[in-house]
Image (cartoon, rainbow, N blue to C red; front, side):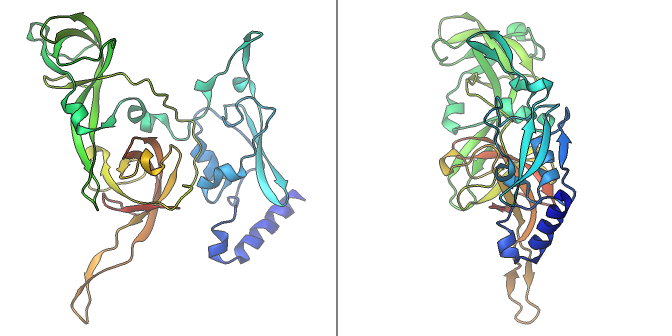
Length: 345
């Protein structure tokens, strides 16, 4: 009977106008009735398994009020399809990995680190915890590396170095950053921020007169150079267990930069877009990518005209700043480039 319902649902969806289908919740062709979550799964992959439009995940996910942390999914959990008022819904039966551990009558520890991420942490890990986008003046005014102890190169944990500048009172842990690209709005020219490229971390060892302090390297991703900047460690909570979803309001933006400075952008590439928290961007927001139409010459009038933009892929925002957000390209149907438009899917 359930298979007949699913078949009927697809038949009805196929008969609806495309404009109406765009608002309907449509299951993927081979959506499983039951699925056991595995280690290494991502929420995007599971969403893509169940839905034609993965960003509609919140509409199919039915929160179980009796389940701890109902918005998180863990390896071993069992997802199963049900039908409510003729609409598909997904529910979860908890597996062993997601069960809470009681320590005292008033304290519980939940294995949040075991929850499956929205996208692969291997692809976005450095962008979640390392690179930042800051105001240019904040980076310019930050303390900076003057010299390594005994002029040694700084390339390993335990190396000591001196830094100069005004250190925030009470701060002992710092990230080491190098100035990267300056991001500007392609339409207005507004400076949206500068990329602070993650180089490593350091802790304060000794303070001296004349604003010179000694620090110890605790982590490096590449050799630390003189003039690299020091910013206090962030205290914000950064997570990758968000849900993919469409933006709540009309969105129109552009891809303004890509990691590595490559000319063509493809699946799993990290990009920056010219919208941030002030425009309501949130981690998990899914946007459609439109390839900028080619400029051609009209064969009759000889004038230059631009072809319409073509839908070419999807990206998911995973980290936001005030005026800029980082996103990862989840699908690319043709080569993409900086300057391509992103909007509601």
